[in-house]
Structure formats: C-alpha cells, structure tokens
Image (cartoon, rainbow, N blue to C red):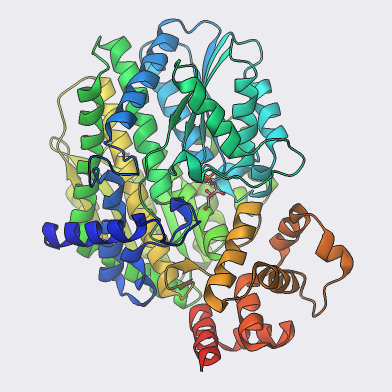
Length: 609
Ligand SMILES: O=P(O)(O)OC[C@@]1(O)O[C@H](CO)[C@@H](O)[C@@H]1O
C-alpha cells in the first residue's frame, strides 16, 4: 500500500471522528472507526490493510498544534511519561519496602501481568529483588478466561490492592482502563488517593478526561470521571498522573484489546524501560529518550505490516477453519506463548466464541507463566494451557479443518519445535509458523523445510548491546506477535460472519460496560429508544416474551451474571426489535441462517422497506 494514500485516508478519517458531532456522546474508545466501516465485507488482504491503517493511528501525531485530542507524541503526554519514568527510577534505586503495581481488567490486566513478570526478570539479571506486582479483576483465572463481572466492583479493586501492598511504604500504582471506564480500577485509584503518603497513582487510558465514564457505580459514591478529575488536580504537584493520549476508535468498535492493549504496552514499556536504563546505564530520562522509544515501536508496526501477504494467508486459512466448525490452535514458546493464550481468551467475550474455537498453549505451561496463583489446570479444560495438554487432548482428534499456528523465535529449542510440528503435520496440512529471527541468528534449514511456504518470518536488526537490549527485542517481538494474532483472530471471526459493519454483534453482555454498549448498538441499528433497546435485550437474555417485574427492576449486575449462560443475545434482540417477532421466532431465524451477520443484515434490510 503506498504510504501517502494510507496517510491521506487516516487524516480524512481522523477529521471525521474528531469532529464534535461524530457519534456524540460516545467516548473515542467506543466510537466506530470510519476506516473500518466495511471490514465485514472485506477479504483477508483488505482486512489486513484496514487493520494496518487503524493500528497506525496509534502513532499519529497532532493534526494541528491546538488539536483537541492529545496523542502519543504530544508534548504533554511525553512530559508525563518523563515524570512517571523518574518515579520508576526512584523506586528502583530504593527498592526496600517499595512496590510498582500494574493493574487492570481483561486485556489491560493481562498486559499488567506480562510486564510485571518481564521487568522483575530484568531486575533479576541485575541481581535485584522483584519490585513489580500485578492485580487483575477476577484474579489469575482472568489471565486465561474472560471474567468480566469483577470489573464492576470498586471495593474488590481496593481490597485486592490493599492486600498486595500490605507493609509497603512507597507504591507506584499504575491502573489501566483503556476506556477510562472500569470501576475495579476506579476503586483502586480512590484507595491510592486516600493514602497519598504511600501511593503515587497513575491512570492509563485512551479517552480525554471529560469522556471518562460518568455514570453512577452501583454501591459506590464516586464515578471514574470524578476520580480522574481529582487526579488531574493532583497532577500539578506531581502527586498523581493521568496518561491518556487518544489513539483513535478501534477497528472493531469498542474492542479495546486491540489498539488499547497495544498503546498500553507501548506506554508502559517506554516508561519502565527508561526508568531501568536510568538506573542500570545511567542514561537520562528526557523527551528525546521517550520519543526514541516510541519511534522504535512505530518501526515494529512497519516491520510487522510489511508481511501483509503472509498475514492475509494465515487469516484466510484460520477463517476457513472457523467457517467449517474447525478450530485454530496457537502453540507458543515463552512470552509469545502467553500472547497466544491472551489473544485466544479474548475471543469469547468479543465474538461470542466458544472457548474451543481458538485456543492457546505454551511450552512449559504454568511453570513458564509464573503467575501468582500457580497451576490452575485443575479448574477445568479452559485452564489447561500446557503444550502437553495439547498433545494429550487435542492432537488425537486434530483434522484437516483445524489450523495450528506455531509462534516462536530463534531463541527456542528447534528440536522441540520440529518434533511437535512433525506430530501436527501428520494430522493436518494447515500448519503455519510465525517466527522472529534477528540479524546474527537465523532458523536452520529443517525448520524452514517443515513449514515450507507457510512461514510468516520477521527478521529484526539486532543491536549488539547488553542483556537489556535482548529484553527490549523480546518486547518488540511480543508487540509484533500481538498485532499478528489480533489480526488472525479478528480476521477469522470476520470471515466467519461474527462482525456486522465494524461492530461485534455477538458480544457477551457480561459486565455493565458491555451491557450499555449492546443497548447503544440496538439503538443505532434500529432507531429504538434506550428503554426499548434494554427491554428487548432483557427478553433475549432471559429468553422470555414478557419480562417480569423482578426482571425489570433487577440490578444490571444480575443481568450481566445471567448473560454468561445465554447465546446470541444481541442478534436476537436486534431481530425482535426490527421485525416485531417473538424471541423464539428470532432465535429460530438466527438458527436458520448459520452466519449471524447475514441473518442480522437480512432482517435489518427487510425492516427498512
Ligand atoms: O477497563 P478497560 O481497559 O477499558 O476495559 C477492559 C475490558 O472490559 O475491555 C475489554 C473488552 O473490550 C476487555 O479487555 C476487558 O474486559
């Protein structure tokens, strides 16, 4: 794709979604992206192109100097990164009784976990004790599966944080909520604000402060907007920090696992790396150092998306597997294995997918995960993540409808990769590799032979630096892998018909944010009122024609709990609203059309005539 054409499209799109009336009053993270409007009708190549452009928006500079929205490269954002990196440095220099806690819900919490482990490993290389910890709404179960309900509890957030920090005298707390929306994180920030003698709170998200969630939180006297405003007041005296550049609407509306997760990783890694380099290499923490770091990540975007053809091929293969009721399996090594497990776990709430549709496994399983709660495999098949589990439970039934994607780097034991690939190859020809190598280190011939043409290989230029450079390269591989896997799972679900325009129509309404998003979607597509949308949603959720008084007056938390057990709730409500049919008729209609998008589209189009 010629670069300037993409840039022109991005500028035009930004002018559109930045205009004050565009999908007002939705915050940026919930708006639909003009660049991806027709992604549901795109083929694999086009899907990659659209995702590339949407992801490039993460690194877009200010359109004008007085632009309303701050971006990653904006002066004020860079300054906050500098200030927070200096706090990191202070803690690393005086680690006794100190802690850096990273926290979030869903993807945000998973990234918190990943980075907390990585940076503790960097410290170990320098013979330093761990300083990092993480919290995630729903505990370690949420690292592997979707646990959306705990996201709604501020008191749970505060309690978990208090336990994590017991006895500490200095805590840098970094709460991540891409939409500035999660009550769990709000509770933690409020706890910090009430204990400023110990805590320095930092909030990371991707909306301007005036778009932070302002609706009342059940059983709590504050809102996230109010907490954000309190933090902004304290920011002047550097007692709290709000890092909230805008990165543009998601390619799939509201799917903050994508750009939100990416920008979180870029921001956090940049500020943590600078803090570490200041201590271990005595380098300066200044604007230029921040800009250099972000530019390195921008290069990762370019390198990754230079593999458009190969990526489109994998999406096509994975899409066919899902269309034929087959499965996609990620088999990864080290942290790239974790990236696979994370990406797979997100498909359940995002696309209403079954946990068997896309699954991730990693070499070493829980001993390699290094999560706080240890081996969770006894909790059920969803928690079996070791490649050994793949061999014992999946391999025997693997077939031509399944796609298996190997994710590894030149640092792996090739004999291991080769042996597993041979076993998989005897069951399915849909074998793919995503692999990272660097200048001095290439894959041996037998690895190339076994995957033949099905290799998406990225060769990185390595700097002959110290161990920290090695870590930095791995962080870049992780981000690159994230982009690739997000594209594969999103693309495959698009090809399966799980996306309508650029909306995830079959999402699970398992927390209050998703519940509100679903009603908003019903309003948008049918023109109904909020109340009509909510009633239709509840009828679909409880599978009843008439709502009882109890259902109407119950708390949203009761509905979101019930949503776990229901299927195709939003598509059913859409059909009910649009045609005036009963819930059971709508369900029958959706069963007939195996592709959700087509069934919904047929109904919406016919309703218009
Ligand atoms: O608090 P955030 O980061 O805005 O949102 C977190 C979340 O609700 O959103 C994602 C789905 O959109 C999931 O990762 C997670 O469950």
